[in-house]
Structure formats: C-alpha cells, structure tokens
Amino acid sequence: MHSQLSPHRAHRVDLTGPYGPIAALRIAGAGPIALLVPGYTGSKEDFAPILDPIADAGFEVVAIDLPSQLDSPGPPDEASYLPAPLGLVVAEVAGKLAADGRPVVLLGHSYGGLIARRAVLAGAPVVGLTLLDTGPGELPVGGRRTVLDLAEPALRQYGVQAAYDALEMLNADTPRYQVMAPEQRAFLRRRFLCNTVSSLVGMGTGLRTEPDLVGDLARYLRSHRIGCLVACGADDDAWTPSSQRDMADRLEADFSMISGAAHSPAMENPADLLGTLLPTWKSWL
Image 1 (cartoon, rainbow, N blue to C red):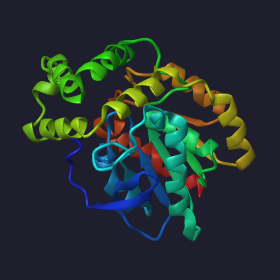
Image 2: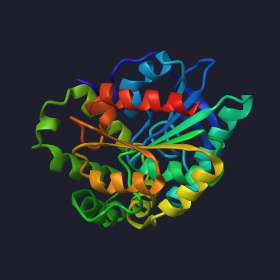
Image 3: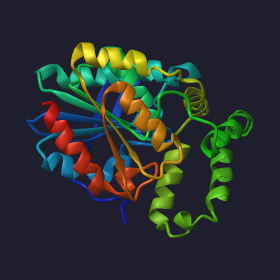
Image 4: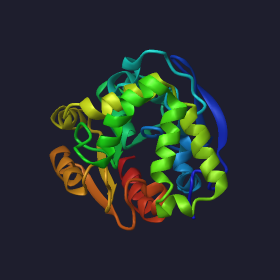
C-alpha cells in the first residue's frame, strides 16, 4: 500500500525561500532536475512512492513543501497563498536549481498545478511542465468545492484544529480511512495542523477564483519551446478528466489518463504514472 510514509532514499533538506527555508526531499544527482510541487493541504511526502524511480531514471529529484506546509514557514497574509505569488516562490526555487545550467522539469499536482503554471508564466527556467490532476482555472462546482465553501467561515471562527476535527468526522466512515494505518493517520493529522488559517483560507480562495489562463500559457509554452504534459487519474473527482483532456488540447500538450487512480496517481498507481512521466520528460531533454 503506497502512502506518504512509503520508504525512499531522499534526504530532508532546506532550500532558500523568500519567507524562510523551503523544506524539500532531495535525491542529489548529476543529471537533469525534477522539481515536484504538491497541492492544497499537501506536502513533499505526497511524492514519496515516485522519488526513487525518478532518481533511478537519471534525474535529481526535489519535492518541496510550499510556504506554510508541514516543514516550511510562510507569511501571515492570505494573499500570499494565491497561485501568482506562490508561483514566484516556485520560479525562484527553479531558478536556483537551474543555476548550474542543468535542465529542470516542473510538475505541479492539483493546486500545485495552478502554481506551477504561474511559475512558468513568471519566467521559471524549465524545459517542461507537467500538470497533474489540475485544471484550466478554478475548481468546478462539486464536493471538493463545497468543502472549501464550508471550511472558510469555520476556519476563521474556530481555527485549524477545529477544521481538522470536522474533516476527520466526515472521513471516519469512508473505506479508505478505515483501512488507513495509524501511523499514516498521525502523519496526516500533524501535517494538516502545521497549516495556518491564513494559508488554508488563501489557498482555498485561489482554488475558487483562479482564472482560466490556458490561452496565455499555450502562447508562452510555444514561444519559449517548453514541453507540456497533462496527466490525471481516470477517476479524478476534482477537475474532470474530460476538462483536463480539453486543457491538453488547448495547450497542444501530451495527455495521459492513469487507470486505477483518482486525484492522487502518485499514491494510487505510481507505476503507470511513472510510465507516462519518465519517457515524456526524457523527450524534452
């Protein structure tokens, strides 16, 4: 069973960021660099099952926490957690990683995809962009958006702990939660509680307000000759697979649908995800 606690040989390191250290899991190497960006309430550990295989394919792999996630400090204001300012943070990280001239491929998962495309539009020096289980703009109407709508006033009034307690009650009867190992439950709890009200509200606002930037991104990718891949789980319940396929068409990007996966292919079917990522990334180099 894959989880955020899946074993890997990456080392926990700190990169320089504008608000303090950017926590990362890193497997150093001499080859091209794969920079992995997690989504809302996520962390670098969301990529645990794919870190070693990416490194074994010849890449240096760097998976980060965004500001205010788990081991990375963040600013106090909500506006700093929108995709555009967080994109500047990721662009800065990519620039420092690329300083020795090695190519960087950038992957953003879910909210991290909205951030990663902002990083590219801000000039991140990358040779390729992978958008994983993310969409052309704001999160569409559905269960995940409803949770965000309900969470904002609760977060403001009662705080992060109360929000987690409510979320845990909602999840308690789901089969996935019932079979989850106690160690993973403890990790997810600790990770969620490391967020701040500002970061959760700010990212939640970003998920509900980000405009469709596919046209701008398509023009930028073409003019700068940056490769692009859109991939998603076949059962994604955030942005629909059909909307992501349409986004790929508009971007003139490759598209891959990962069977046996929903919104987190790195956990749910890492082998098939890697079967898409690695050959595509190598074609960009």
